[in-house]
Length: 217
Image (cartoon, rainbow, N blue to C red; front, side, top):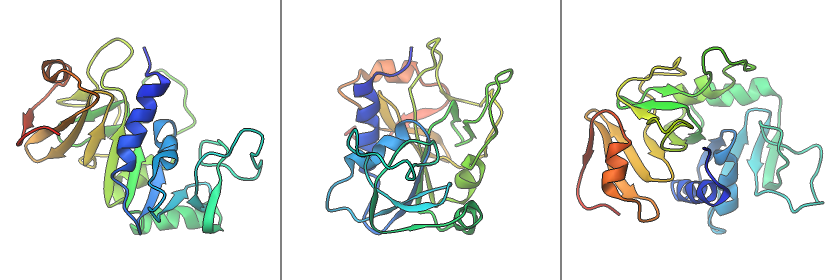
């Protein structure tokens, strides 16, 4: 079963706390696209989209959408003061040059060594890997937002990914409806429990090496 609206928004709100003033940020499809709605009003950031937009704001009010303004997923967006527009070649040039401070992506699996598998389930039709491959390798920080388990209840934080990889050793942080987890050379590190989740439940539903460093937030 997928995440509900409240859980998705809670994850996006927590991810928004990782964004600081002055950053250039790229947001993936799904939960990441909700992040601008939860940025502190005092936070000055420029959100970039692969389809050629730098300076995305929050979602427009219903009825006030501009059909010419959308993110990479095709959803309507607003823009902030100073926004700019360009073609996708320049957009990917920004990404490949390493100009993106943080990218927030969804995923199907993340391994204890930071491998990312977020583009295909074998046998399913998809349009392609998209910009995730470049973002995962070139962004200065990679944050994954996703459900803690798949629709069958199997862990999505695993010892080794069983799905085709997008990039190896690239994920720095994972935020789910249950926990905030970072990744270092020793595997998963549990940093926070989300919404008073049960510690034993989080540990049971996380495969691979996981440890707790200090008190949980």
